[in-house]
Image (cartoon, rainbow, N blue to C red; front, side, top):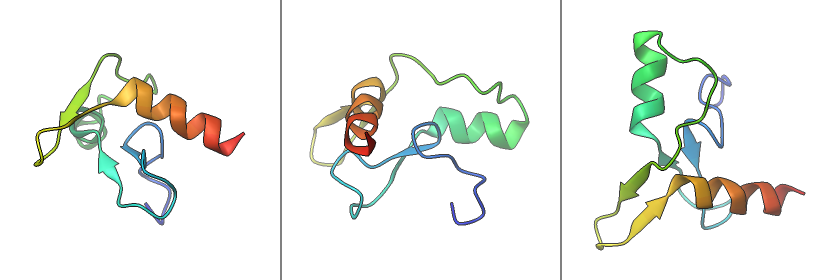
Length: 69
């Protein structure tokens, strides 16, 4: 993340604010590792959390964009 390899909004998200822990998109990280990354964000992808909640990456990305504007 420090080197800029992982991009916020693509490879990881911080839906609970800038000081929260990042939530990684495993699909985007795998694509980056395999060299299959095309620059397009995954659509409709969700991440299940340990507490039973589910993070929708499209919604999280929209919230992050709104926070940055």
